[in-house]
Length: 129
Image (cartoon, rainbow, N blue to C red):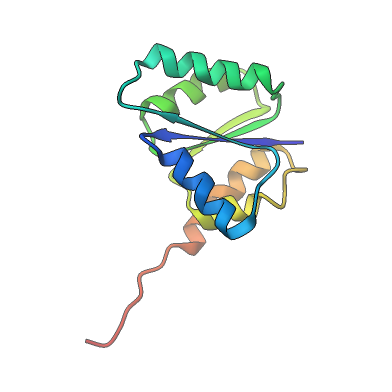
């Protein structure tokens, strides 16, 4: 079973959690962790490691709000040398909803799906002006 850990800055993960709960109810195997302005990076890193260890997470897809941000970098560091851990960033609610139905798939397949569904679901509504 693949687990999903949503990481972000200043309430992003909590917001995604609320968004998904409204649309889909509580999701099993999903975890949410924010990096708050009053925290230092070491505190966030410790919370992330504790979340992984406490829940015994082995197969993980990290979904990060922003490429290059601290949560993203920490997820990348955790995943180095571990193909069972994948990191994606910038995905949208459509992608996260889609992967909630495929947690029996491998982390790499779930990560690929996140990216593809995000690409396919971005839209600019054009109207006659």
